[in-house]
Length: 405
Image (cartoon, rainbow, N blue to C red):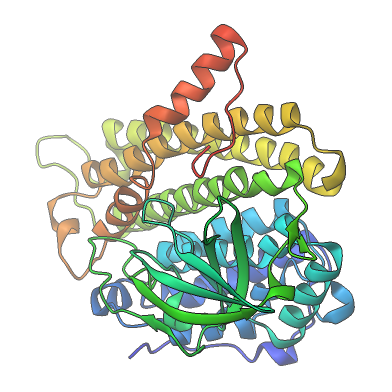
């Protein structure tokens, strides 16, 4: 059971701008950091952690202010994810995925649909999960009058038991038309499995799900009007948007690793007996490693922030997004993803060089940073991200929208 101690957020003023929300995320991260290693080791369902995100108001960051949301944009959301991930990569992932699935109605749905979803989500502080793993066989969606019936299984369903609502996706039977819909996570026929047992991101509730005849009104099929889908280029922005979520919780995890390691080095690491220094912080190679890793991390963060700003311009005018806009943005995201992956893996792996042998003790929990990054960076091969960038540079080719590009 988590022993998270939470502030009485209801007595605090609600942030009104981006710096205020990022500061709030930093406060949440400080709470998560107090027992992050112990919670990672226990691997229990993060009910308390999600309650913390709700109480702090972070789950409604992107929601409309008129309905109790934060009214912020994606550039702030990415920074918030990064701050939370400094303390706990699993909770950073959960929050980032929540933002994407909360935004899915706007990406795919009609204005009437997404306005209704976002208002309800903000008022009730819904936490979103998603069962949309594209590597599995498609969920079959059968039409039954004015109702759609979803049936199938997905290997991964991030958020599962801690979510209030789940985004489902399937293919309409006898067609190649995909259908997205949001359903209560306690819907009859929706069964989450406790089979997530990986070395990292242990608290993301990313196990499998069985979807057995989950019924959804046709009117809830995102983007459909009179049972006909109305496509836009903006529909395809889900992939670069979620990839930027990945980038930011990788970088947040790396930053958390570096900060935790620096504290350890300054308080616990002993100087090498043959080095001629009385303190580890005076060892030239220790200073060099921290300088090297910090410079690389700062550069990766700067690139991530710049690309997030470029993406926000597309979010600000969805109907004007062209295929060329979308493709060029995906190339930039791919570059940031490649850099973030390499930097995060290097930082989380090399910190042990400057903390020393005793820092590998299980009680310190320094290994969780690397385990978290190593686990999630395998989501899709980073070589294919570099390929997108290389082809753009050499031939001007822009990536076609897929589930991964």
